[in-house]
Image (tube, rainbow, N blue to C red; front, side):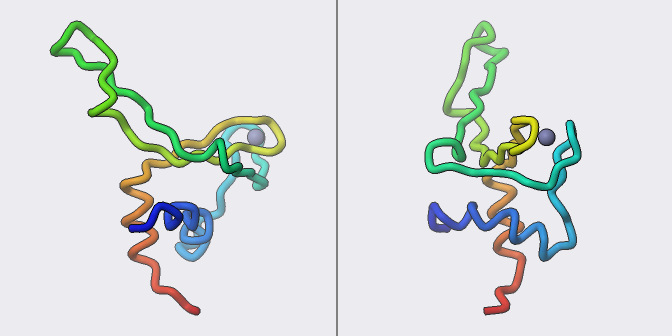
Length: 90
Ligand SMILES: [Zn+2]
């Protein structure tokens, strides 16, 4: 999958009948920016004294509510399978 494909997630969810809605304020307006969309949530490794483990971390794609600033994080791995499963209508 190309790096940019995950950015089609909101569109792919819409095709599944899912409307993104902020869990805090209910707004349906989200923003993305070039610098604020791909993150890695580091894991905490219980077997090594609860140290931060980036290798076991979770890559996430983030959308930010324009109304209240709440951040929604989506697993990039799962997002890829959702986007791949949506037939392109173009
Ligand atoms: Zn909000």
